[in-house]
Length: 412
Image 1 (cartoon, rainbow, N blue to C red):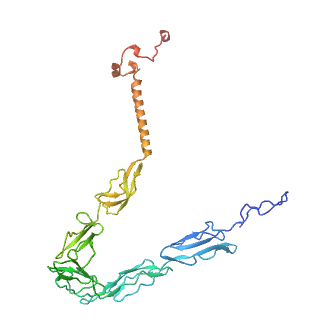
Image 2 (image 1 turned 180 degrees about the vertical axis):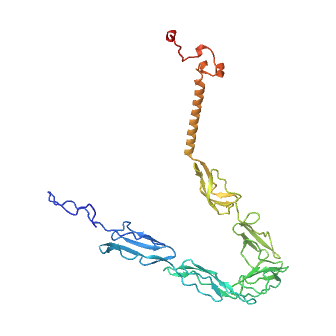
Image 3 (image 1 turned 90 degrees about the vertical axis):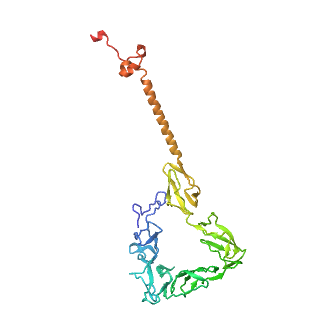
């Protein structure tokens, strides 16, 4: 198209040269295609001139229907876009798979992030119930080609039935019942004079077996010890049985320690299922008594009523104060922070302003005292009130009058 105001003619001058050539044509522009719902429009040239290209992309969970690129081309007697505008479609999934002896929660449509939950069918009283094997829910997602897929296989509904266990020279503490299904547990203890080899608690698995295997109860002798029982800690190395004089290391879990505060100790088998110095670990979140004291500042991120080891907070000073130290500090236990809690101190500019204001006030006070004291020193008695007149000298030499009496001639 022609550029308005630009000449389309050349003139041969007296110097036998053509006048200077100026650009008098420019590219036509295509109209802006508008926003793409649930997507983005990427433009190389914001003027959208002839030859410009636009590419499109969709948000997560949506896929592009139509071309991903259009170009400003010649159309009829002007310019236009080479293709129709695309749109973003929410990625759909096929209906979720059905399962035997169970069902899932239905929805009107199954699109990106739709979740379905499975449950097993109820059975008449007296029959073995079905147990749900696997995660109880799956959700709609997509693959590399933006095709809708389910997050995983559906669960199964099966009858899980574990045997009723008995341990010789031992008894059940928990888990009494005639039958056991998935995730049911039994806890055992040995009779006096016996120690346990294996785990004291076993759980029914989806394949109708107990895990770990049921323990055994061995007779206590003067030459052996069973594995030491300790809460919130681990035994290194862990075995079912130890000989007299054999030592093991006991290590407490994270945020746990022995009563004396240490996290590890070594114990020795004294025989007869007795361990030297055996103690339990004490656990619990290590918290601070209160928030850190920040004069002229505050916590702007991570604020809690109490803190566990590893918690991080961010500190900010009030206006006019400068932070000295790190803004982000981490709680390390026992009311201690790393780095140390910063301080908020007056800004240098604020200190300068305060000093200037104080200096001005001192000067004003001095001027006021000077004015009061020295302005009354030269006043005449008739210029003072009655109280002041009694306090002032009466000598005429101390008074200068500014009133001029008229002469007798002037009066006449």
